[in-house]
Image (cartoon, one colour):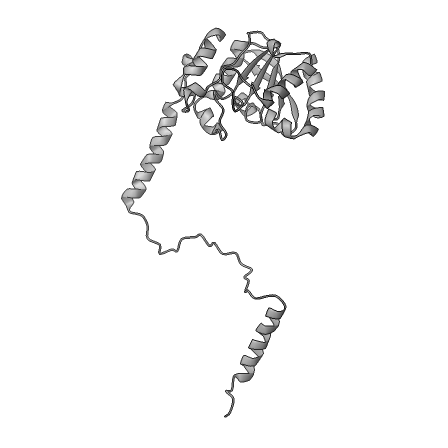
Length: 251
C-alpha cells in the first residue's frame, strides 16, 4: 500500500516531539502572560439590584465610621479623668471594652513612653509580658524606671491586625496628641512604626530616629524606634537604639 503523501511530515513532527520529551520538555509554554482569573467578557452580570445593594452597604459602612468620629469637645480636660474615659468611651474602638488597658503614670514625667497597643495578655497594666521586660531593661540602662515614666498606648486594647486607617478615621490621632498635652512629659519615647504617623511624622525606617514633637506651642524631644516585638527579634538594632537614647536622654 502506498504511504500517504504527508507521512514524511508526520514522521518529522513525531520525531521532533519525541526528541523534546527525551530532553525533558513535555509541556508547551507561552511567552505572553495570561490572566487566568479574568472573567469572560460574556460572563453573566449580577442583577442590578445586587450591585445597588452592595454600593448601598459600602456607603452605609463609610457613614457608620464617619459617625463614630470623636470630637475634641468630648476629650477629657484633665489627665486624672483620661484613664477612666479611655477604658469606657465606646467610640474609641468596636472591640470589647473589658479588654482595654489604661495608661499609667503622672503628669510631668521625665518621659512618656507610647507603644502601638497593649501587649497580648495585658489586663490591668500595660506591657506585663516579654515586651514589658525589654522596656524595663531599656529604661534601666538610661537611669529610668517605670515609676519615672508615663506609659500609654495608641490603641486601647491588644489587636493582632489593627486597622490604622480606621483608627485615624475615629480621630485616635487627635486623641493621642491630646493625651500627650495632658501628660506634659519632658521627653517622648515612641515604640512602633504606626505611632509616628498619628503624630504627623513618617514611620521610622531605622531602629532609632530622633524627632521633635510640636503641639500647642510645646516642643518635646522625641525618640522613635521599632516596636518592642521587633526589637526582641532584632538584637542588632539595639546598639543603634542605645546610641540614639544617649542623645535623647541628654536633650
